[in-house]
Structures are given as C-alpha cells and as structure tokens.
Image (cartoon, rainbow, N blue to C red; front, side, top):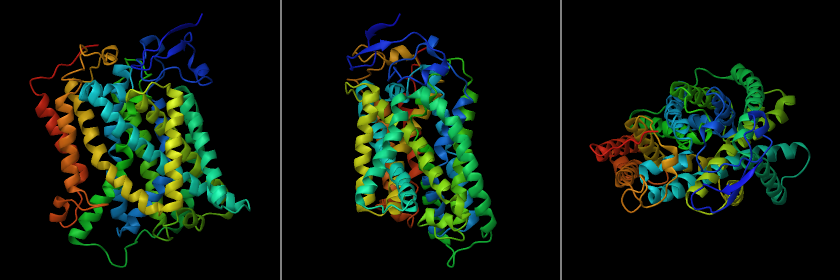
Length: 483
C-alpha cells in the first residue's frame, strides 16, 4: 500500500506519494517521483549499456550539423575540420567520467557537487552553471528545432509568419517538456527507438552527402600561421562545448545499481556521445565543401532526393527534442538544488517557460548562426573549469560518495565546510574561470588571447588551472567519506 512520507528533497517541504517498487517497464508510464533526493539501492535498476542510446539520441541533431558546417565557414580545409571534430568530441570522455558518480552516490550531479562547493556554495553553482546555462542551451536547441519546423510548415503550404512561428515553438517545446516531466524512465524507454529512427534518417543523409563531397576541398585563401592556430583553437572549443555542457551526466546514471562497473558507465556514455557527435558534425563539414551551410536545411536538401526533404526536417526536429529533453530534465533538478521549494515536474515547466522566451527573442531579433557560435564558445569559460573541478574531485575521492550524507544540509553536516562553502572548490572554480576569461577570443578578446595573436586558449587554460588549484587546495585536507 502506498504511503505518504515527507519529501527528502532538501528545502522543498512537499509531501511525496511513494509508490511500491515497479518493474522498469511500468515506470515509464508515470511521472517520476524522485527529484534531487537519494535513490535507495532497492530502486536501482538497468545496465550501463542503456546509457548509449540516451546520449546517441541526443547527439543526432541539427545543432551538430550547424557546428560542423561552421568549421568550413571559418576557413578550415576539410581535413583540418575533421581533425577538429574528432578532437572536440574526445571531451565526451570527461562526460563519461562524471557519470560514474551517479551510481556511486545514487544522486544527481546537482547534489554531488555539494562535495566540491559546500551546501550554500553549490546553490550558487547550480544557479549559474546548472540552471542558467542549461536554459540557454535549451533555448539554442529549441531555436534550431524551430527553424527546421518552420521549413516543414512552409512545405505544407502555410506561411511561417510571426504567429505561426510562435505556435511552432510552443508545440516543439511542449513535446520536449512532456518527456522531461515524465522523467528518467520515459527517457530510457524512448531513446532507443529514437536512436534507431535517427540513425536510419542520417544514413540516407550520409549517402547523399558522400556522393557530392569535395574531399580535396581547400578554401580560396587557406589560413596560415597564427590565423590558422586561432581558428583551430576556436573550432575545438566550439565542438567541445557540446560534451562540456553535460556536467550533469550523473543525472542519467544515478538509477544504475551501485555495483555497475565504472568502466562500462564511462565507455557507454563516451561512445553514445562521441560516435554520433563526430559523425553528424562531420556530415555538416562534408556538406559545406559543396553547398552553403549558412542555411543547413536548404544546403542539405540540394544533396538529397526531393522525397526525403520532409523526413530530414522531421529527423532534425526529433533529434533536437531528444537533446532538449535531457537539458530540461537537468535544469529542473538544478532549480530544485538552488533551494526553491518546487516539485521536479513543475521546475521542468518553469525552465521551459524561460527557454521559450529566450528562443522567441533569439529567432525574431538576432542572427541564429552567429548567436550559436558565440554563445557555445563563451559558455566554455564557465563549463570547462566547472567540469575540471568535478572530474578532479571524482579522481581524488576515488569516486567514493555517501549519498545520504550529501542530503544533509545542516550546519553540522559533512559538506557544510565553512559557513556552507568549500573554499577549495570555490577558489578553484573562480581561478579557472578567471584564467579562461583572460584567454577567450569570441564576443571579446582577452589580454592573453590578444598577446597570442587571437589564439583562444580558454578551454585548456580553464581546465588545467581549475584542476591544479583544486588538487593543491585539497592536498592534506581531503577526506573521502565511505559509503
């Protein structure tokens, strides 16, 4: 018989109906009851290989085509662009590393990071790195899906005026948020068939693109010297921004049994992100050797049979819904972790509302491609150091996290540190962000980038600085709580 117990989510004060354990096949039909609370061992289920389809479905998307094509537009040769794509997507290894903390703690990333920043410090971390950036990515991806949907509407003979565009954005957002609201089990159930459908669609795209690709493509004025290195660095940052944005990968692995092999969790997460990410970005770059990828939809349709046009657009919309559902899900958890008293399902809807507003502004008031490039590169200033601190903590702690202890928000709790803030994590993140900001060259040029002739080293500089600072500041003081 179901019982009503106080919700263990810190600060929510909301009673939650706790159903008896259900087999995995039954969970997808109900709204997920858990939020940021600890997942007890008897509710753990699944296998690491299920993570492959979660990340694969999220990476066969329109934004990957855009970024792949943008590398050619930035002046790289085809082979330089492909090398950048592979290098940038290797950062999925770090996303995989973060995901092993989920089974260890039975908690989402938004709670695990209390170990790095303290209870109060982590609220600030979740407000900025967790919630704000997630909403921005949600808006960017929603804008990408909407542009494909607009073209689909035009094919149906409907003029995509402002009113129609607003309606389309709302429909795509509603489908996305429905998955996010139902939560983890729905994601696990839907993403395998979504992966298979998208793979089939993009296989057709690949055939069309390969038939026309100019494999010897070189721009009319090839980049050399400092200009080349500047574009290569910017390109890697642009591609790496995708995997770096998933500092919340433990959100989707936390239901796995505590005994799930860490290598399998890392491996399946990495493969699920790397393979489709590299493949779809590469298709964008290959297509850009023969068509204008400033408008990827129109450009790709020149390389594909006419009958496939609507199916391509549907695939682009579906892939973007898949990635945005993950983003909305994590943003909802981040909003709870900030300390707002709200159920997870309602927090997802709140995030969606904010993202829709940003999307409509972006679509109606600015250039989409420039916005994508600038925002993705600039967010690395925050995401790189945040990911470095998290990954370093996992290594130093040997992935030993006490899930129930992480739920303790009281001043006497093990993760209260000093006035609720862990100085080591806060200083390491601040130092990494500062150095990264000095090296950036996107919306502005930092002094270090200027001294290097425009070469943007924000990504490696932020990662290395944050990791080293956190290691030094925790030396001799690190205490790893045992499970």
